[in-house]
Length: 131
Length: 206
Image (cartoon, rainbow over all chains, first blue to last red; front, side, top):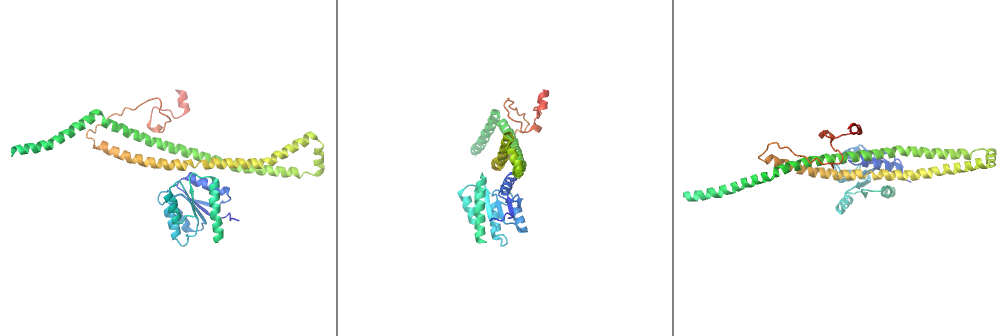
C-alpha cells in the first residue's frame, strides 16, 4: 500500500502544467505537493529536505531539468529520490540522456492521467521493493 | 606613368560608381520602404504572439479554476445523496410497511432511492470528464513553448532588420502606409491603435 503522505515536488516553468500535475496527484490521493518553477529553485527546496518524489519538466530557464537531475544524483543526501521527467522533449537522444542521468521515468507531453498514474505506480513499486 | 595612374584610378572608381548606381536603383525600387514595412510587420507579429500567449493563458487558467471549483461541489452532491439514501434505509419497519401499502408513495420512494443510489456513479463519471478537461489544458504549456521559440526567432530577425535600416544612408523618416483592409482579425494591441473599439458599448454607441 502506497504511503499517501509522500511529499512531492513538481518542477515546471509553466504554472498551468504545475497546477495540472498537482491536481492529478491530488486525484491519486497525494495531497502533500509543493512546486518549483525551475531546476535551481527545485534544488534549493530539495536541499532544504523532506521530499520523497520529484516530477520535473526538462526545458526551463536558469537550470533545466536534466542538469537538476544530474545534481540530485551527485548529491549524497538526495541521490535516492525518484525523479520522473514530464517533458515535451521527445527525441530519442533526450530519453537516452535522461536515462543515463538516472531518471526514474520519462513521460512525453501531452500525456493522459492514466499514463501519469501508471508511471508513478511503477516507480513507487520499485521504491517499495528497494526499501 | 601618367597613363598607368589613370588606369588604376579607373579600376578603383568604376566599382564604386557601380555600387552607388546599384544603391540608388534599389532605393528607387523602394527596397528601403519595403524594409521599413517588413520591420513594421515584425512588430505587429510580436504583438500578435503576445496576444495569443495572453488569451491562451486566460483560457487555460479559467478552465482550471472552473474544474477546481466544480470538484468539491460534485463530492458534496455525492456524499449528500449517499447520506440521504442511508437515512431512508433507516426508517422504522412499521413506517416502511405503511409506505409499502401506498402504491404511489411506494413508487416515489423506490425511484428516489434508485436516483440517490445512482448519484455517486454519475458524479464519478462527471469527475472523469473534469479530469479530461483539466488535462486538455496542457496545450497551454506546449503552445507556450512554441510561441517562446518563435518569439526568439522574431527578436533576432528584428535586430538584423533594424541594423540594415540603421545602415541605410537615407535615414529620413518615411511614413509607412498601412494596409487598412477590413479583414484585420482581433485587435491584439488596442493601446497602439486609436481607430478600434475595445468593448461592446463603444461599438453600440457608433
